Image 1: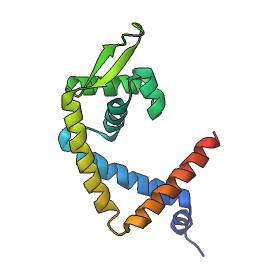
Image 2 (image 1 turned 120 degrees about the vertical axis):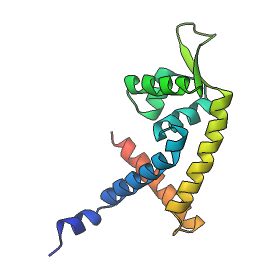
Image 3 (image 1 turned 90 degrees about the vertical axis):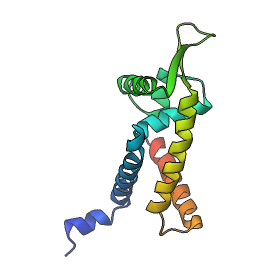
Image 4 (image 1 turned 45 degrees about the vertical axis):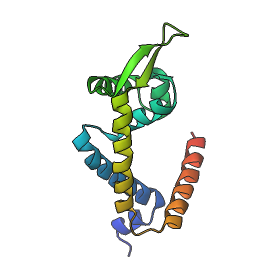
Amino acid sequence: MVSPAERLGSRTGYVLIKLGEEVLSAAEYALAPLGLRAKHVSVLTLIERHRLSQQELSTAIGLDRTTMVGLIDDLERTGLAVRRRDEADRRRYVVNLTDAGASALRRVETLLDETESELFADLSAPERQALRTLAERALDTARGRR
């Protein structure tokens, strides 16, 4: 007879959830000395490349507005980001990366690269790429179902 734990372990979704939990835990541990969390990194990464409002950031990351305001408050308090009134639409505030934020983001990327290398050390580069490709495809399919 198959135990409940074995039944759970045979489910792809369960294995992916557990992997996600491990990856998030390792990332949070690596980021802690910088006073950052994974959600902060998502914001920093997006504002490095795009001029986005708080609302647009909230939508892009999939967080409610209240949580997003708290994250941006954290980043402003630490000098990594700043809210600025949009010159084209004075009602709108755009979140910008500061020089300190850009520097922190470089350190974060190095830390997360090292963390990922440790977590996936048993996989070859082609296997990592295949895992990422399959996970992205499954995620796209799952998002399309909603």
